[in-house]
Length: 518
Image (tube, rainbow, N blue to C red; front, side):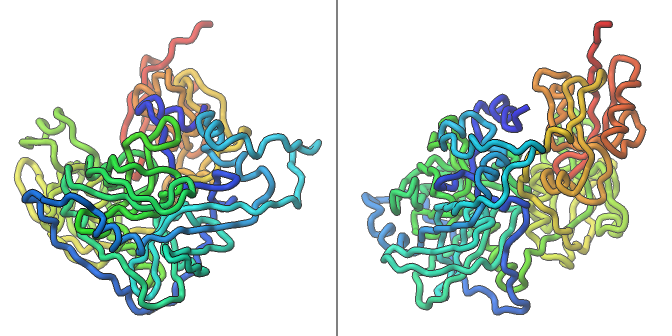
């Protein structure tokens, strides 16, 4: 099953990471490896200019953004990256290429090479693949923020300023979890863009998107903040997107989203689109999230994130009533991992986390985002509801283990397992290293990974999705794909109870068994 069909079904749209390339859409390293050049330890911090005050919303007599645009556009650069790739392999292996919408948009490059008798493609043929995106100068001494997918796997990267000057860029590091990358060019007295506080954004604020769409050259578009805190799109591990209707298109990736005062509020990253072009729904990584990435990569060579050690679940109206809550805000703790900060501090299964360090928790995703943006070894108050009473627990956060968050190659056909009766329309595979990397599954999780779910199946209706890991089937542990197949074939009764690992946590699903005709 096409891995992007579920997105079209649920959203009637296609999620697109919009790096503009020639001649291929793929910008990923064929092995999924991080080619980042590690930053030296104990480097001086990046000299960012911070302007955190909220904008003035008491009306405006502004009739033109020209003065602001003249001030900020020199800070936005064109990014050109190139790499040598095996002929046709990158297009064939890229998951987007299987979608007819993307094949029509980017053409049929990559087809036509015959395989050898043993099923392998000829070796030795390579071509130079070029990608085009944008970046933002954030320090006067040459640090640039962009998207990871703009430069991933590149052998050479060039940054071109608005004055025409070209610089060879060094990749300082990348953060797959936020699709962010940091580059460095050797120059001084550059026009660095000041950073705002993206937490102060409100729906309706005017924003400008600046980048290089379709390679036309620097372009500025205007819109408003359509929504904040967008997530659950499945694009990356940590999603807290700014949504905007400012027109952004392929080539805008890594470009600046600025407020009406000309301060950086986000890095343009993705769009939802039927056609591959702008349809008024674009997403940007908030500058606060990007700021944590650049500060970590420049100073320490890595991004350190806080870690609590719980599996949270979103509250629905029924759970809200069961736990005696007045609204659905908060995150229900379904698991507390052993030897974690949460366990040591005394957080228990059934607690509802309402606040962390004074910040209100909206749902499970918001809890993960909030904790991840805090420094490890920080002691923070966590307000919970336990047995109908509020309680504050002091937790010393740990450090989130490093996890791959990017999408990898699709599963090879021979790794998929035929469907069974009790899990009709479901295909599974063993959790090897490639599958763990592709679906961001930690080493501690054991089970069978779901590689495909028929949208017309009862499993899909119950909530089972591609990338989920089946941990238990009818309360019996599943260790691999063979286990899942054998156990599902022996299920009796009307329903199958699954315990699955999904999006960083575990949950139970009750699936109606298909009645097969004999």
